[in-house]
Image 1: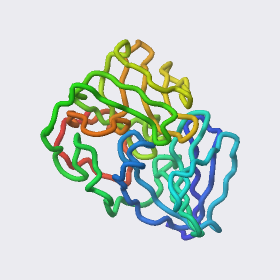
Image 2: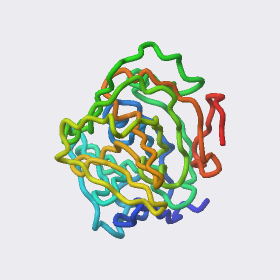
Image 3: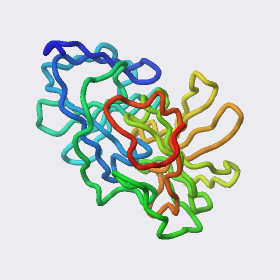
Length: 257
């Protein structure tokens, strides 16, 4: 692969687009609570120096300061998780799912694995659910959207379709829920994006956190990463694996379709 290869990427709606030149850092998967909140499952990122990165469209770009040491970039129009900018460093972390084609890198490491959700394992088969909470409290990272619903989460489905990879930055994981039983406690930051397939995705316009999905037929699901505390769920299957990213392997032995 040429050292000066140009790779292009964007959010799902196209309101944010970028180019990177030259080689990318291997992908690192982060299981910290912040990355799980914003992505809806867990996040993954490659990285490139600022002098080899260029925004080609920024209409939808918004930044959220998630800590004293970093800000997170997302599309405020579709909710796609895109960037992580460490304070004082001349490099930018980028969601591998945001690239339009194969980014030419591989997943090399998992970090903050002690913060992983109870419904999956960073590598290998998911654990059995340790608790079965009767109520699930859910929220975005900044707290501008919060709701609860009956628990436990039960079976969790990982989706590797292009839409889910573009929006989450890696791939998504969600569980089916009865929307009529969702009790909203705060929706100041609530936004919705109409997907090309007729569904709607709910996210926070203030911090970019992925929250829920309503299919065209009305079926409703909640992003597993939105849950505060134990979920009582267990990753059960992978779908749309024909569209999975080239940089990772599915190694948990669960059914794939």
